[in-house]
Every structure is written in structure tokens, then in C-alpha cells.
Amino acid sequence: MSTADAREENGPAQPGRVPFRLWIGVTGHRLLDNIDLLAACVETTLARVQTWIPATQNTELVLGVISSLAEGADRLVAREVLTNHYSVLEVPMPLPKGEYVSDFTSTESKHAFESLLRRATTVVPAPRVQSREQGYAAAGQYVLERCDVLIALWDGKPARGPGGTATIVERARSSVPVIWINTENPHDVRVEGILPIALDEFLGIAEYNRQSIRPHVFANALESARHELARRNPNANVLSQRRYAEWFLPYFVRADLLALRFQRVFRRLLNVVLLLTVSAVTVIAYGAAFAPGDSAFAWAEFGLLVTAGIIVVAGRHYRWHDRWIAARFFAERLRAGYFLALAGVSRSPGHTRRRNEDSARRTSRSGASDKHLIAWTERAYNEVWAQRPTFDNEACDVGSLRHYLSRAWVDEQRRFHEQKSERFYDLHRRSERIVATLFVVATSAALIHAMELFGRGSVTSRLLVVAAIFLPAIAGSIGAIDLEREHRRHAERYATAAERLGDSSERLASVADLDDLRRLAQDVERQSLRESRAWSSVMQFHDFELK
Image 1: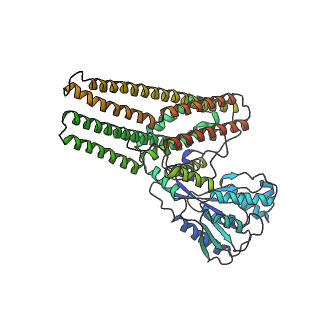
Image 2: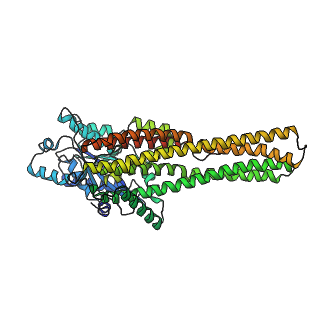
Image 3: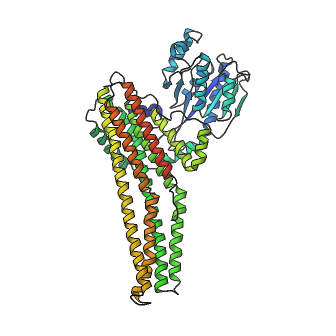
């Protein structure tokens, strides 16, 4: 499937922008009366749910349905959702397909199942369980963990077995909105559970999509990225790589450009704040030495400090720091996702969003910044991942694929981490040398002034006073920059990551089986994800501050 086809089928054709997909889960009975009335209720319910999320000009609201396609409620809701533009279907199988279809009552029912299954963009394999009941319970739990809204076609009676409708509805009430359509009275529709739905995730994606990039800048960056991928892979026939590149690159290029933009704005403004605070110290020191009674220097200091404070407040308001971290985190996830897709990995880590106590604890510990970071980037990544091209096992040359993954991904990332480690060590050592030099000079100036070698009140003596005040301020600012940018910590972290990637490269060289190659690729992706999360955890505490 080409990129254009994928966009036409799965979302709005805006280069690199990510649609927001609202996931509808379904649970309910297999035997239903009043099918037409229930279908009309579901249609009305879907229209109502879509008003809960305020779609914007740059972020289209689309639907996805998670259904095991059992007879009755599962299929009814799936069909209604799929009538909406750009809707997709995800099917968690409760049992292996051969066993599952034996539960259907007729040949027509089996054909209906096959017809809907062919429309699925994702089919989740059946879990390994001891009984059929456990399989159905696991599928129901999967639906609950993945959905944003649960539609229950239910008569309100207790569950008839493990994983029954009543059980799923009861669990859902504590985590997601539940729309209960009473099957015995289809006009009785109730909304229960927790509202609003996925609003933080939507706002994060909408803010990301709202950022504009000049068309020629985007086009040039996209073409440059294409050339870079071609350079790393002269053999263009490896798994029809061009299809994967055209799917992946628009999303990656947008994330990368925005990350660079936000980083540049944040660091420039931070440097201005540091310069203003140092200038304030210098001005007041000069005034104290040369014009003790002149209030102009005090007013100048006041103006410089107020300006620095305004920049800090504005920086926090526009969240340049948070935007930088989120966009870079998203870009690195996409980079790894491209190589996973090339290897034919069916599911990427983080695919299932679990609303559990661990997630809540993570949010409470890390604060609002990390909440936005994890929520919207994971969701956006899952949406992009769902649009990847179909993997062709027959066209796969394991040797060529292994060589490409080794050279273009693992070895490239290892070299990148080695270079970054060396660069950060150099920056840290340079900062230490400058701070030490300034300390020595400031100490010498203070000593010479104290010894009155140039006479009390002379111009030279006053300049020594200014230097004794000014130089420590400069040294403190340089030390603050070194601390804020975590040069030494990043150097050590990059060095550790490079070492791990070197081990993965050695393991990759001996892989001969496609399944082993996929497992190793997923292991590398997990390393990359841990590294990105470690970086974001460090950097989220270095927002705009008055140093």
C-alpha cells in the first residue's frame, strides 16, 4: 500500500500530521432482538460520542472499533463504526481462528465473520489460555484496556460466566465512559463511568498538529531524509523499502523539524535569561564602584531582572521546553518503529494503553509535563504504526534485512551515541576549565584590590572591584548552563547506551532466522525506548528558571 493510499484509507492527507482516533470498545450479548432499533441507537450514540472531543481544523477526529466479532453486539457495533469515514477495525481473537469459528451458529455467520475480519487493520493473536472461558475473558480485558469508550449492548442482568458482559461493564466503570444500551428496551441509553475521555491526549496531538512548517522547509527536509535512507541502503529492493520510507518519513520529518525548532527557541531564550541576570550583576557592580549615588544603575538592574522574569514566565506559558521533549521523544519512537516495520514485527511495545495504578503513579510522580509527553506521543505513535505497509514474508531476504538493520539502525545509533558521549564530555570539561579560570582571575582581582597595589579609589582599583563581582557571576552562569544541560550525566548515559548497542550489533551478526531477527529488533527498540524515557525524565526538570 502506498503512502497516499494509506492516508486516504486511514486519515487526513496532511503531511506528518496525526489524526486523533477515538477507540470504541464493544461488549454485549450474542442473541439480540430489535436489531434495527439497536443499530439506530448505536448510530445515534456514535454521533453523540464524537461531540465529546472538539475536533480542530488540523486534527481530524476519526473512529476505531475494537471488537472480537462475535455474533450479535460485537458485529453490530463494528458495522456501525465502519460506516464512518476513515474508521478502522482492530480484532482481539479470544481463541485460535479454527476454534473460534466453531462457536458460530451458521455458515452465513461464519461468512459474515470472515468478511469483517478482512477489513481489520490489526488482528491480535489469541492468548495462551487453559480454557475457552479464559480466552473470552482475556479478549474482553483487552477491549477494556484499549478503548476510550465502551458501548455495552446489555440486558442489565448478572454475567452468565467469566468475562461476561456484566463483568466487563463493572470493570469499565472505574476507568472509561460506558454507554449502556438496554437490549430489552433499546430506547433506554445511559452514560456511566469516568468523563471526559482522552482529553489530555487529544489536546497534546492537536497542539502538535497546530504547529505550522513552511512547505519548502518541509519539502527540503523530506527530500534530504529520503537521500539519507537511500545512502544507507543502496539495495532498494530490500523489502520494497521505498513503501516503508514513504509511510514513515513525513511523520518523522515533521517531528524532527519541530523538535529542532522548539529546542532552538528554548535554548536561545534560556541563554538570554542568563545573559540578562549576569548583565544585572555587572551593571550594579559598575554603579557601586564608579557612581555610588546614581540611581540609574539600580533602575537598569531592575529593568534587566524584570525582562528576565518576563521571558521565564513567557517560556513556561508557551511550553517550549515541554514541546521540545515531546517532539523529540515522538521522533525517536518513529525512527525505531520504521525499522520494526521493515522487519515485519506485528506489534510494537506500548501498543496497549493500560489505565492502571502504575500509570496513575507515573503521572503523579512526574507531573503534568510527563503526563502530556507519555499520553499523546504514545497515542500518536500507535496511530502512525497502524498505517504501516503490509509485510510480505515471501519477499523477505533475511540476510539483506539483517545487514541493513545492522548498518542503518544499530551501528548508526551506536556511532551516534558514541559521538554524543564524546561531545558532552568535551562540553563538560570545557565548562570546568572556563569556570576554574574565571575563579582564579576573580580571586586574583580581589587579592590585588585588598592589597591596594594601585591605590584606594583609583580607576584600576574600581575595575578590580567590578571584576571581583562580575567574573564570579559569569562563572556561575556557565556552571548553571553546564548543570542545566546535564553535560556529564548525558555523556555517561550515551556511553552506556553505545555499549549496549555494540552488544546488540554483535548478536545481530549471527542471526539467521526471521523470527530471531524480529525478537532482536524488538529488544533494540526496547533499549531505544528506555533511553528516550531516561532522557525525557532528566530533561523535564530543566525548564525555564531564574538562575
